[in-house]
Length: 111
Image (cartoon, rainbow, N blue to C red; front, side):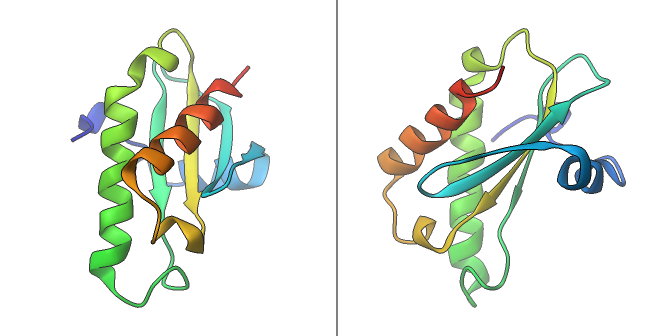
């Protein structure tokens, strides 16, 4: 599980990322990011009800992505961004390895 200090939880921070942030897209996710005022990268994952009606399926995607982010912190070390991942419908049926490859590819696109 990703530590709480790496989660984007500040009120209104996600709105700022959506409105003012830059975007990059992958096969399973859309990544929105913007420079952060903090000293670390903070992450959030959005899985809407359009993704699946079952909360268990949406939560599975969220848990997988948070675990991938925890294991790939070396890609974001030294960078200061607020990052939001928006899951696409195809992420529900994707394997862990496919999700890992997509998230890693998106993180490499960070300037």
